[in-house]
Length: 163
Image (cartoon, rainbow, N blue to C red; front, side, top):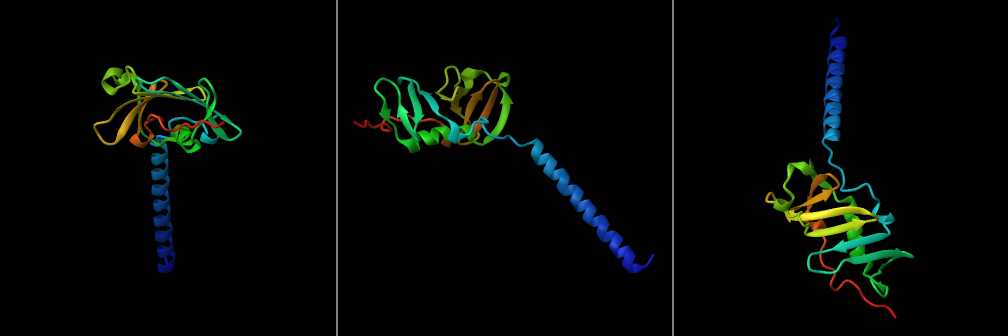
């Protein structure tokens, strides 16, 4: 075999080996992808219910592109605050585990520290994790770990009345 042919063959084998390794890594990463809390599109969410301990449940509805608190007399809510709550739907999950792996009371889910319902999809928030600034979130029969940035907070100053 000529030297040039041998070099081309070795180069082709090296390219095939690297392509195989890259494909294997891509498949491995895809298998370990944790995804988001829900499959909901935040822009399409039109109803939000927020329950925090020691506070009345708050109901919000999106009308003509703006958020309104619908408890009692409708009042306009701060759109940015409610859009942040809607964005929780696509919060990146750090890890998923079956709910049966946990004792709900030990991770703050009996009762939950916060209950956020986005268009009927319930997200129950528990305690922060000991491994970092993360919170446990029950979604159906699974528990997710998400960044503490997505933990719902009291919107005490988040509504204003419009006359």
